[in-house]
Length: 374
Ligand SMILES: *Cc1c(COP(=O)(O)O)cnc(C)c1O
Image 1 (tube, rainbow, N blue to C red):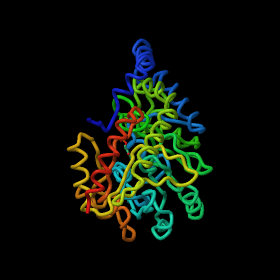
Image 2 (image 1 turned 120 degrees about the vertical axis):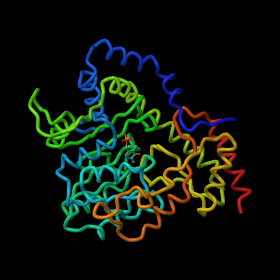
Image 3 (image 1 turned 90 degrees about the horizontal axis):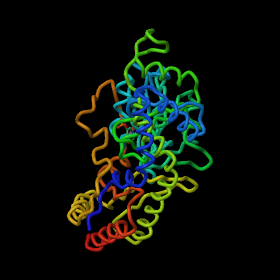
Image 4 (image 1 turned 45 degrees about the vertical axis):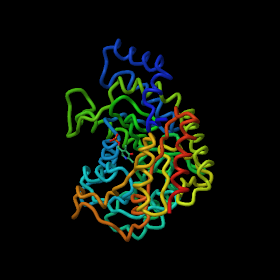
């Protein structure tokens, strides 16, 4: 049996008529950039979050640095984040001209550890940038308290967790901006690049609308800006898919529970931890081997068995040769948890359209390795 890592085409087939109808509507409208379909999707996305504003932009990375710029974060300012994330989180801080300050992650959730944050704060700190890694919210209540005490912004990297919730808080409720990515691998994905910022601040909404469109608020009048827009065809695809996101996240949660039930007895593995009271939306189902030297053999065994398991992310940002060390970044304290996560992580196939047979086959192969592992 072959188990794919993604189910993009399965998902398209399942709701093809809805997607095709929206795309046809855009094509026949003749308005493909900043048209009515983008407006419709922005309204739906803001409503979905229970927030006032949503602004479609070119991709998730742009959503992050446009948010930093809209909040006035730039050269000389510091943003505190984690190193066990997709590279774009740090890249966006660099694009804005600010300094990334990395702290360790919580060993169970792999999200930023609030207990490490205060020690990293300096007079130059401007923002906390938690990543809702693998589909689970960071501890936003603790982060908000720290941010209030030190008068900091909070910008949520929500590329992986649309539809997730905390215990008693929603995404966006405790921050200044929520940044989302819509590449196809994400829980809500289009057939190309896309992203959005969701916020309750009118000034952030206005600044990003200006910045994403050549610094223009009025036709032919410009201040300095960029070109980073969400195309209407993508907005149409996303509008069709947004109606299904809760049901798809429920299916991810169901598959995750099935994996966890099957793998509960494994001796050499740590399974994903769901913080009590949270709704984890399992963008990824990430297990960790007990020891780093077990990771590659397990990955190879699964791949050789026809299972397209992967690693997210085997090289943490502070271990990347390409990161511009110097004044652009610094590490605060040792970060053993993020390093362990990078060294031991394996992502099992996870997407809503997985079948129970595929989950069971994958779990059986993982257990077969576990029994033979020393
Ligand atoms: C995907 C992702 C991004 C970047 O999104 P793009 O749309 O690819 O630019 C940023 N942060 C995290 C955590 C991501 O997973």
